[in-house]
Image 1 (cartoon, rainbow, N blue to C red):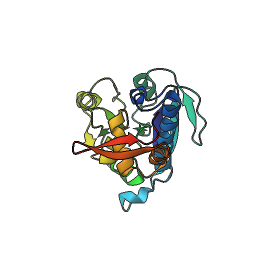
Image 2 (image 1 turned 90 degrees about the vertical axis):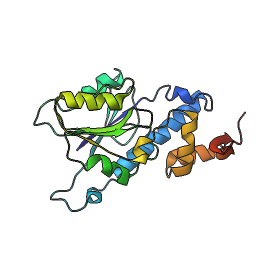
Image 3 (image 1 turned 90 degrees about the horizontal axis):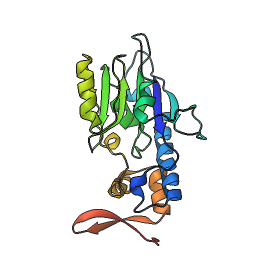
Image 4 (image 1 turned 180 degrees about the vertical axis):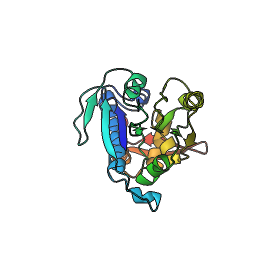
Length: 220
């Protein structure tokens, strides 16, 4: 299965600017991106159970600028929706395409199996804020629209195309990192480079008014 990982290496994650500098956001975004690539690289189709044929993943990076990484990279400066639609299946004989966002710092092979296991025409992994964090497209008439509440929109697009939809219910795939509050989940549940980066940068869990937040021991 072809797997596309969109990544914007230049000025990423601007909503984290209250707690991270420009250079720090670039480094942290890169750490999350590498966590996603690691999860895909170590994916084993045996997680599905017995299969007639193993599922191999062909991972590609779809970047807005050149990126140095172990996976093949295609540079497309167009907005995310246009760039992703250009790589989705266009013919019934085309292989399915999965799209996994680069800021899923909690992604694991087991979580990815929830996305890749269903044999539906379209599989959607919703984000907590109404977005679409990952998907699989098999129906050539399905196209994405990442504006606004894209999860709801993608279900409607699939319905209009008469495409069967499955939802990948995964806490790890639903957790994308955009806001400072999202760092709590990375520190609590992260097992990879992004969590290590936060700890090395001085971030730690704190409790404020009974809720878990993050603080930074070396904040300036």
